[in-house]
Image (cartoon, rainbow, N blue to C red; front, side):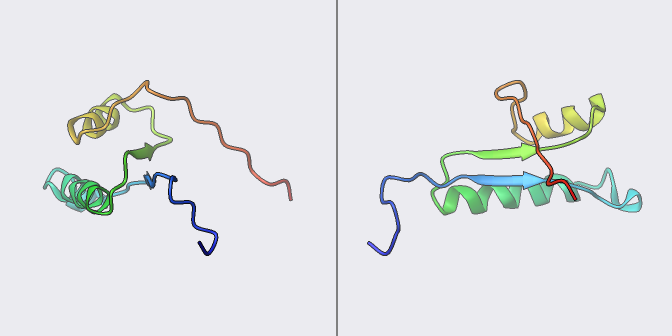
Length: 82
């Protein structure tokens, strides 16, 4: 089957969402996240993971208000040593 695993389930990944300060609080970020979620659901993704380096309560609430749940999984990152 050309290397495609029919039982694999696709998922979406959102990382590093940034809105220019001038455009914040206008619904643009929320609209972009809604579009990303719609695109994922329309392509049959079973989940969308959002990664952020922010610890800001306001930012985390923004993501929760956009439909993401925190404290479901723990993420780790390894960077290649140069």
